[in-house]
Image (cartoon, rainbow, N blue to C red; front, side):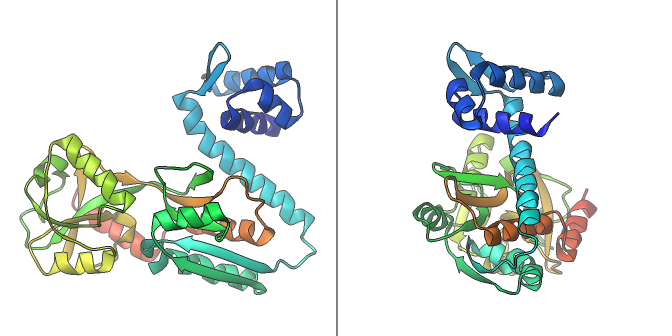
Length: 308
């Protein structure tokens, strides 16, 4: 597999038209078709369905696209860094993020970044996911760190990891000794959840609906810390991201199944934006941080695994 295969693949995946994709990568249509066929032969499965003039990604193509995009982005950043290795990167990076990431993940990214690039200024705006998306589209933000949006029109989302959500309950709750809890068992269960305007809440609502469960939502809170505090002081339960948990003597985390709710954090930016060197450098630090589990995450993960 060669670099050009990935560039041809991502161009066709974005445009879904052989002639226009060939024009973008400056080759003939027949060359592009041949190179895509070579790539499909190498990976061992079709990446596109061709129905006449219509082209669509297969399920395998959708899966491979995220990895190909990430690989190309890393390579382009590396080439750019080599080109500018003698220059000092400076300027402004405008970051939009939600409360969850602003608690610990983003500070863990910013610390090493400002140590490496002391002449770059970071401006962080904590806001709702919808507002971050709007500001990225308008150009008032350079990059977002948020969960995968439902509407990605004009935006590019790069997944960082998949985050399994878990049920949290007080240690004397009837669920506290369970190894797993099915979503259907939360029917008529008193719960505190995020408000409806959060994409995570809408995702959970779909999980409840699929399981035939209608929980009793007795409270809604728009940040995680008070949700955890309420759970630790009452008989209500909640569902939170496993990576957001820190060791807590008052609550337990129980895996959920049928279905297991999963949300996807990632980087978000405007698709047609020409990202500056400082923005690209910051994105690289975020990717590195996402691949490095923090002690609190590891402790939370062990607590969940101890229930299995």
